[in-house]
Image (tube, helix red, strand yellow):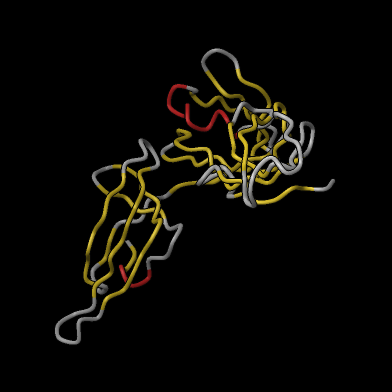
Length: 187
């Protein structure tokens, strides 16, 4: 159990028998009465969002999750295959339950697997990921006004809008929460 006043972003809580991760929290002290915490949580199983307003002195159940750093190996028709970076154990994660992660997984890269009650329930994708531009149309200088963008396709199949100067084969940094171009990467 954890006091609501001690809940922070990233804390895993148990609600309705399911693990949720806190994505936003705000404290409100009305002046009269008790202070409350407004907590916004995302389900680690199905992605649904739950909002709660709870007095800060009240206790809430925290979910006992384990996080393991693992390297993405490959995928087959049914599963993504990972290898634990320390113990070299092999893990299979259902593609069907994590379909939205497909465009962000790159073979050989490490990701954190969230394990609850012995089952992998989530693959944590980093906030920013470097991709290689696989498909890009060429634009001629002076085609449009300042700030113009074009769609490109990355090496994983993700479509992103980028500035006109980005060419095929270049590396770009992408915000995985918004699918927005951040910057060109020189490596």
